[in-house]
Length: 216
Image (tube, rainbow, N blue to C red; front, side, top):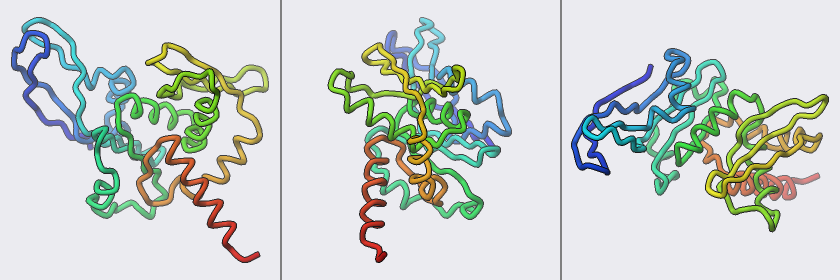
């Protein structure tokens, strides 16, 4: 179920105190209207009753999609993810093939929701970002997945860098399927994965080292 609570908020513009509903857990299968509030980020906005100023408010939130068997835990940007994973209680559904992810920002949560809906291997999509970032002419980012469209026989992924105000498109090729296959063992591995390009690269490197050390 979705779990709301009320917190005090001080308007950064006029200093007026007010209250806002925050959600420690959002189950979009039971409360589907909450999904759009995450995608348009209205769930994380506070409107001051005094001056009507709208300001973003970050709070930790657990996103739960029962249909795709996915949970995404949004934590503070500087949170120690290792400590968080150690502190999480055993999940009763851990053997039921769940995808478990950790993100550090509202934009990353929105991205994960879009990735879940796309049906693509989200870890493989994160790895594609490394290709974009390796281009010396590309802005540093951060880059976010925006969606996928099909043009004739091609599948096109769109990414954007809001900070730089630019976007780019990448055509999915057979290599994406191969990359997805390499990352499949991690996809629903009963462990929380930090969904970043850098972490996915480490996973691929560790997997390659492990395979290289196995007897043939």
